[in-house]
Length: 104
Image 1 (cartoon, rainbow, N blue to C red):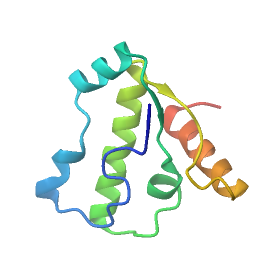
Image 2 (tube, helix red, strand yellow):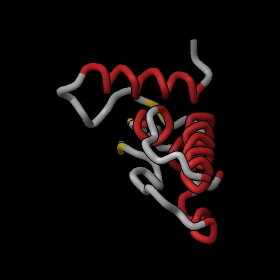
Image 3 (cartoon, rainbow, N blue to C red):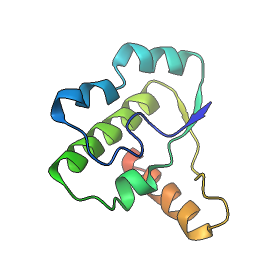
Image 4 (tube, rainbow, N blue to C red):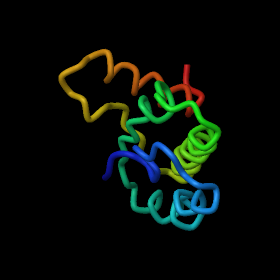
């Protein structure tokens, strides 16, 4: 398994390089077929992004699409955070993952 999604922590991204962060369907299918587990730690990049620029918003759209694509392909999504000592951060990351996946 792995944590984070491509583009995590990238504050500014030029549109010409945005494609490098896209998980394509073939990769998502391969990961799903292997039942890869992922903790995408979405809270910072999607739920509490400190950078509100047009580039950051476009990267968030790519991030959300990646997680949705991976989940549809069968990648096991595990809620959580790499900030273990702060329960509020863990809760935020789990809530954002549920929102991205359309869970109640």
